[in-house]
Length: 319
Ligand code: PEP
Ligand code: MG
Figure (tube, rainbow, N blue to C red):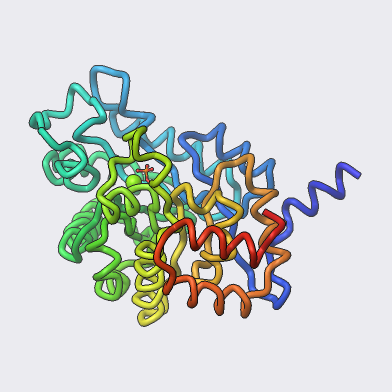
């Protein structure tokens, strides 16, 4: 019975009408990737590399980074692994990064912006990533992108470093869609990116103008807000124009009630917490894509997140 359950967990998540949805895991290290694999994850959809950089006095050198990234790939054999470049700055304290004090850190030198503020640190991370094997399984993800030039700048840098290392292979390069500007320009980004991954935590924060750490607003911070649904639809449409895929790695992907909505909007990869993989997979197996598509379209005309939730509960009552 146990063997049977494991086989079920590992099987692909396919909708009733035969569409496969990739269920990946969000991890911070190799142990969590192993946990995801045990729970039947298809791949790693997001490795947050912050864990390597915080709570210390000096940045990890390229060798230490390479070892940590390789460990994540080794923990998820034969499957794709997405590793995100450092997403610190502003409120996330990293003493050795010489970032200025900011009155509004969420709108400051965060994500890729802090990488451009310290190009040597970004280069070191890109070099460590390029040293991982096999590169065919590595997908690099850039946080807080708001326009194409930022992506092109990293792509160029990656090209130069790979050339210096004499590499013939290149990892895929994708961008986070977590700023409204990126969703609005998704068609432009998708032209130059290999894939798009929606960070609903920040996309909600920046779209609704609600601090994701503000406890008073927490009950109203709902990523199923119709404004978010429209931005997600726009992202999928932009990607479709260039034949690229869209995933969701924010917390919304781990919300069983949101899964039919995201699938209906055209998202084909959901990256969730390791322990939730079986639940999200079984949820997908009960869905009819045509119904999800129809409902997701009509939900975009609703006027609040609570209306969307009520509607979703009505359509997919199991949640
Ligand atoms: C997000 O913003 O949704 C995301 C996945 O990134 P993080 O939570 O690490 O900011
Ligand atoms: Mg984010």
